[in-house]
Length: 57
Image 1 (cartoon, rainbow, N blue to C red):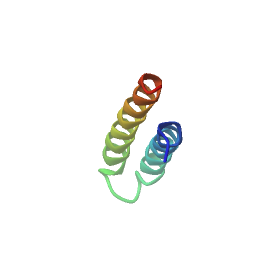
Image 2: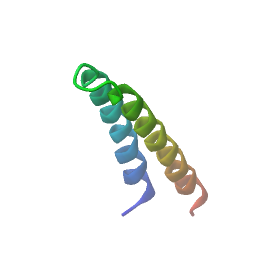
Image 3: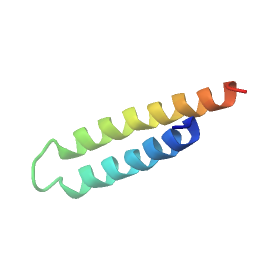
Image 4: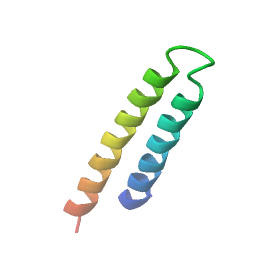
């Protein structure tokens, strides 16, 4: 599995987590917090994998 695919996968995952957390805010009160935290962690993972892709020959 190459790093470009993982970077795109984690970036899409971040968007899904953020939107899902905001949509579930009426279901339970901590859903936006969990969604934003998960989305932020996924974005950091996407940044790490995109940096690894840039450094590999």
